[in-house]
Length: 175
Image 1 (cartoon, rainbow, N blue to C red):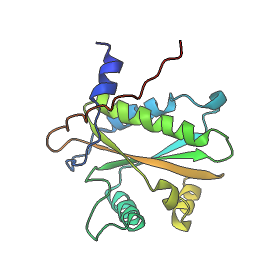
Image 2 (cartoon, rainbow, N blue to C red):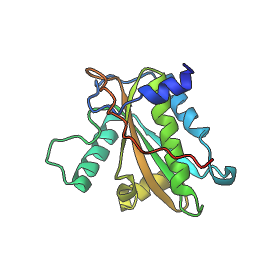
Image 3 (spheres, rainbow, N blue to C red):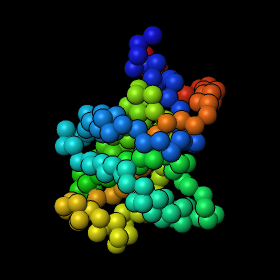
């Protein structure tokens, strides 16, 4: 089977990560894969912020937990040591789709490198908060950005989940 098709069929959302940090080279490779996602009219209106600093990652996790309404002590990132935050420029009509395509590339690239990954929401709400708008400014990022999602990555702790059965009746042909 083609390796890309195989990866598409085998990738799973991971909900239990080891605390070990993946090599920076792997993180950079995953980030680069995100840069090659398609975008409307080739505008490339998406940026990714790699959070590998544990203190910043834990702070983001806590904010995400509160937005989600989860109990104290729970980690929406499931212990993943790396969180890649995908944001898209709201001035482009296809920004949400473009950001989603970047997320897909990040998830698949992590899998291809033997790492686990999961898409976590609430980046939109986080980056509407003053402290995260300030983070963007501190990084030299200007403009109107919307958080699309978080790609939490790391080494899988445990077994990779089996795929859920595919639902019937989801493909139609017009011939």
